[in-house]
Length: 136
Image: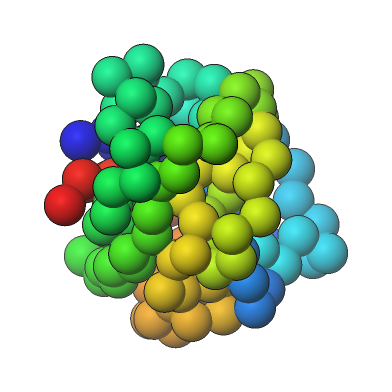
């Protein structure tokens, strides 16, 4: 299991139709419609080597996103071609596109699919968002 902590921001919209992203950046404009958390403690580069190795075995991964007692779950998949080197972001994609920011592909949800009660919670400035990645 890998856990990431991020924080809410009033500009979070979570309306992107094919991805969601967690970033170490603290600033967020309304153009960042895929972002669901800022000031994260990890990016792809910071994920443990053991977890990266598992992801490259095409495993299924449950992503549990929780904020203020509201949670949602997403299922995504690893891939042997994952790069996992971006120093700023983690992106989960519905597509099979891979770049250094991609952690999971072929996910069953994007930002727009997340429970809107969760999105309301993560829009609160400084709300704590826990994101757990559990290999199934």
